[in-house]
Structures are given as structure tokens and as C-alpha cells.
Length: 199
Image 1 (tube, rainbow, N blue to C red):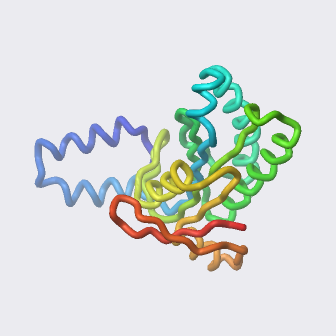
Image 2: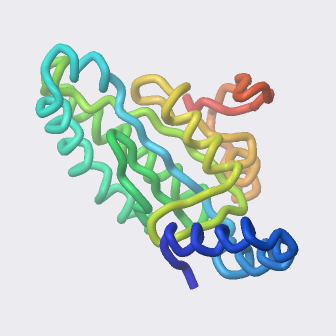
Image 3: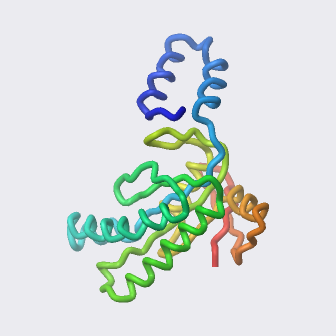
């Protein structure tokens, strides 16, 4: 049964006082909230530039335009929005094909909207997708693939790009989908990280 982030933190605080419980608690927590999930992390391009040039309220209006597109796209693909912070959206899906469907719907929808808008009004999503065993809480997610998907969406993806972790691409291929994608690599935190850019 999933629980909120603060409950996880309360549990982890217990091990600060009693390190002998770490191994048993690890097993307990993974049993309680450990799941295999696909992840979608969306960031919007232009936050710093637009906030400086047009003000925070203008950018938040662009963000709201994006949310009106993103929420139904994720729902249509049976995803769950875990949290929204700043200009980010993080969602989970049962499998990677659904996350890809949502990401493609977001990019296609934003392109259709942006075609009728001025440069400073456009959505320009940047998307990172991951897949693996994570800790899924009611209000947050943690895990290696969470970190990688966030890096791809927040730091590496450019406007309207969908980037997949190596694990996400491997899983997608096991589901019988082999999209046209470019294999790339980046160093994150001193670690070589392979990823794929959907064409």
C-alpha cells in the first residue's frame, strides 16, 4: 500500500537511531512500495529566458497552457501524475509503451498549439522516459530510473524531444515496438549513461 513521502522519511529516521534495522527495513520498504514502472518527466524549455524577459506570471500562463495539454494526454495513456513542481511534471505508467504514447501525444499536441502562437507563448515540452524498479509513493517517486529520466527531461532534451533511458528502450523493444531512434551517450555524475532520442 502506497503512502506519502513524509511516512517514508519517518521510517528512514528510525534507522538513524538504530542502524541494525537497515537490512530488514530495506526489504520491508521495497515490499511495501517497490514497483516496476515506466516514468515520464516533462520540463518546459525557456523558463529562465521567459521569466527574465516577460515575468513569472507570463511563464506560469505558458505552463498552464501546457498542463491543459499534458493532463489529458497522460490520462488517455492510463498514467498517473505523481507530482508537479516548478515547470516539471512527473508521471508513472504501467509500461513504457503507454509512456511513449503519452509523450508523443504531448509533442504532437504542443506542436499543433504552438503553430498558432508567438514565440513567447509556445509550450515546447522536453521529455525524458525511464523504466525500472522504483519506490512509488502517493506524492513522489525515487529510484535510479527516476533520476535518469529526470536528467534526460530536465537537462538534456531540447524542445519537443523525447529521450529514453537504455532500460526504457530495451523494455519497449521487448513489447514489440522498435521506433526510429538515435543512440547517444552522456556523462551524468561521472557515470556514462546511454540513452535514445526518438526521431
